[in-house]
Length: 175
Image (cartoon, rainbow, N blue to C red; front, side, top):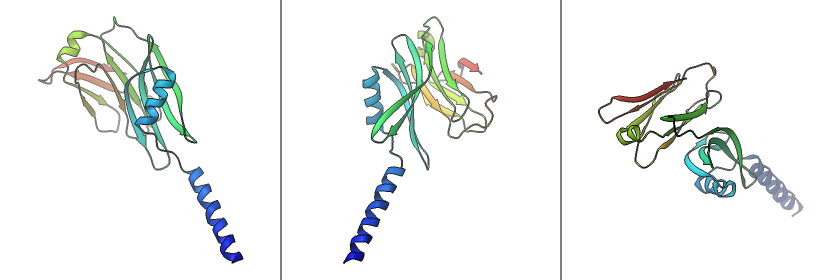
């Protein structure tokens, strides 16, 4: 009987350790919790799950700022680490912000009404990765792209193109 109690205690302790050491998956509810708590306008988001972690990259508007952040779960509570913020500038036809280190990501906002009117796709090209293509569905004017793997060299160039329905490039940027 004593051996069964000891075995049961060991199993419970191992179960507690495993449940605490495994990550919590970020989901849409976690993202909405953060957006409401921080009083942000969510422009786009992408949940990333790896073998050892789960996180979401968000692209948001905060008053007159465009920003990006990373959401993780600590215990059972979603946490936001704001990464980048820039002033929203409606006089620019297209604005972007992002990073080329770690998992690269780019948030893109189309301000120009003519570009948005005729835009059909946005393509992001990352070094050593397949191009990512998103369809532009009005009235959406902001888009988030996240690389599928970490870039080793942050000096690599990223490129995005906005094309119309015939494939003509309406706007492009290399950085």
